[in-house]
Image (cartoon, rainbow, N blue to C red):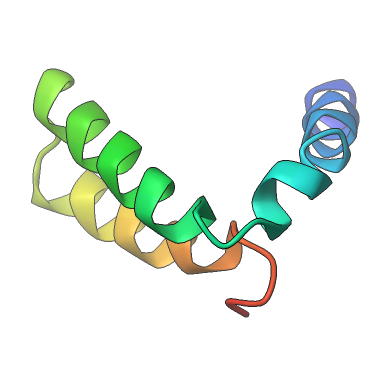
Length: 61
C-alpha cells in the first residue's frame, strides 16, 4: 500500500498544472460521466466518485 500511495501521489503532483486550468472541472465531469457509464458503476461507486471529484481540480477545495 505504501508503494502504491507513493506512486499515486507522485503522479498527482505531475498533473498540478493541468488541474489548475479553468477547464479542469468541465473536462473532469465529462471524463467521470463517461467512465461511470462505460464501467457501469453501481450507486455505491457513483457516490464515491462524486465525493472524490471535487478535490481534483485546483481551486475547487
